[in-house]
Image 1 (spheres, one colour):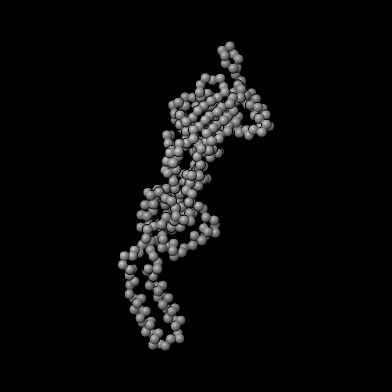
Image 2: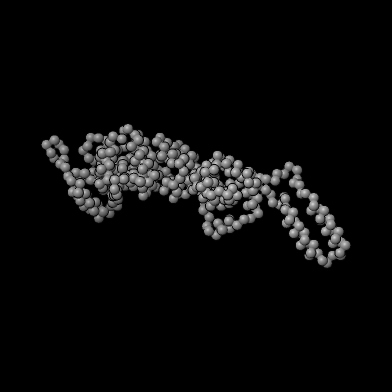
Length: 348
């Protein structure tokens, strides 16, 4: 201890060597040690990692204190970082090994419901969610400063075993940056930390069929044709098809007398020449059904690629791919469904 009451400076290399020995002892005792290893100067690179760091830096309470921990985080001083529901625990190398504990309140139920309702139908899969590969609209929702997934300052409690009087010492700050780095590779930890289930952002009704069923869906059937183009095929048979069937039937009835056969052929010819009118009050077309096969056929009928079709509907290309792989009816936002119906009306 120096004459001014501060601990003597210990070189980084010496601190790291000492910390490594301490961690090795704990590992031998059965503790799962998870250090934070940052390559280069960039602490976080992914949507979730950068979002965490930028969110905390956006608050004036933290903006002046967080930079103290950047160097500690970058030089590997966070020897261990564990993230559990509502709790972050870390061991940070300084003059000694200091223990950091950060408590995070569970995400408010109303806030979580609001996030789910706004994101409903826009997140295609767990992979898409965790990789942060979704529309800009979803990004804004989940990273919103007040109503997103990241915690607010009044939802965070900080503590460290070091003698620093500041609530956010450099060891706590290093730990918070370490969380951002950890979210690069394990973004699911954020949902775990906030006590929510990430799968709830994905529509449970959306399933990806197996290859065999998908091959069957890709076959063009009369029923699906009627759905996509809004017509009842049985109500208005094509004259050419009817003529072919008539010719076949006429050829088969060779056992009947010639006069009778000619009379029946003439009667049928007269009937076929009369236009078939739909019954009173019956509609020929029907409302567009947003099933996976229908959406795909609509896109092909419009002669649009997935990105261009997605732009017209107002969703991400990932959503279009997901919808087209869905066997049943898709859950789609009203605005997107109305746009699909408009496009459908142009091709029927």
